[in-house]
Image (tube, rainbow, N blue to C red):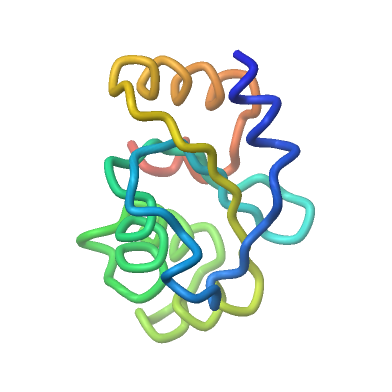
Length: 122
């Protein structure tokens, strides 16, 4: 579970970060809004998931955006994108092994209790 500790200590990136600075490899990521942990997930491609699907896509492609819309009572995709750009940042750790990523994702959600992960299922 060293990856979880490393993840929490890692540098935070803003959602305006240049795509080239985020790897296209697999990993686990956390999304924060100021000092609140919002969301934890794993991804096959960190760059696509964080800077594509979550930053500017839509609620059909991103459970994070869908949950954020509900939680913050945002009315449009544009409002969601503006909120993310203004208030959110993310951290990640690269983990190639899919089974290990999935296990760490479940562990991190249980231990860190991110606000929006519960809203995904509802």
